Length: 154
Image 1 (cartoon, rainbow, N blue to C red):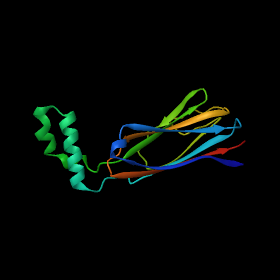
Image 2: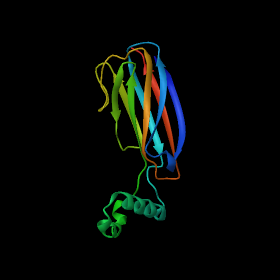
Image 3: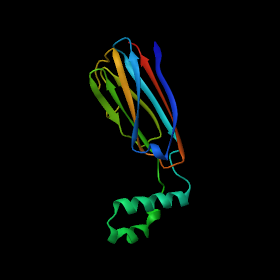
């Protein structure tokens, strides 16, 4: 039997870059496996003028003054700029792993004997679990995300 434990959707904007959003859900019965379906869109910033502005801001902030003109001379090599949201999972006892993937659509799982790369396999404990979305970079005006977590009972 499969039960939906969490369904969350949201929209993030520029100001959300380098922040985190945490969702909690209760696992009433131990065992089985979790399936996490996660997606966000758009992936790429299509507006070249906006991209050039963001690249210039980054060059100003992170490049030595003597190198800035040289780096900005090849600003197009940084294209396309991309949104990046990753997720990590904590069970009632602590960290279960992180999926720092660039794919905008992900199907992940955590089970007793196997798990998606980056996550620890092992028995699923009953209790309060947390999934944290890390919004590393939001470069588009808005970025929509969707997270669904199912418990596949043994």
